[in-house]
Length: 202
Image (cartoon, rainbow, N blue to C red; front, side, top):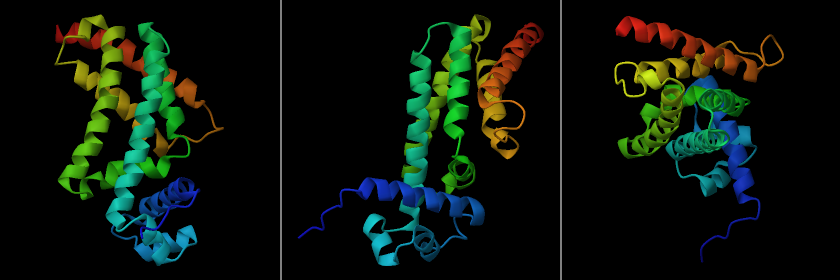
């Protein structure tokens, strides 16, 4: 007979993923053992294997949950307004707010995604592409002069992600700018700089 799931199965699974993410970020995926994950979660290896058959499955679930959360958040932000500039600000602020308390997940997304098998990487990269596509559309709406430009739209989109994604290395809540203020600063820098860039490319 199949083993039934406890009522708090999903809650326990999420906490396990959070603990594992912290370990992967601190010690690296290859430097973290299943025993270390079990100990951090306060469970036996046997119980951990009830949830996950391998360390690879743990990594995949961490990244899938993280990216699905990001996508849901920015999708809601995209739908929150139709004014182009306000929409781009909303997307950037939503992304940074979702990064709150997710530094470990963000770090291992950057460093460890490529360690997964190709088919699992493909699933996660599709989620990444959907997030990037929302930002690219918002930038194109805010900057009609670059909307159809393959030369500028991608560099602008990835430059904004560069400002937002790497802020975890230096940003500290309660010191200086708020997340919303930094999101606005990043988008305003992008929009102002793009006008100059368009003139130089043309």
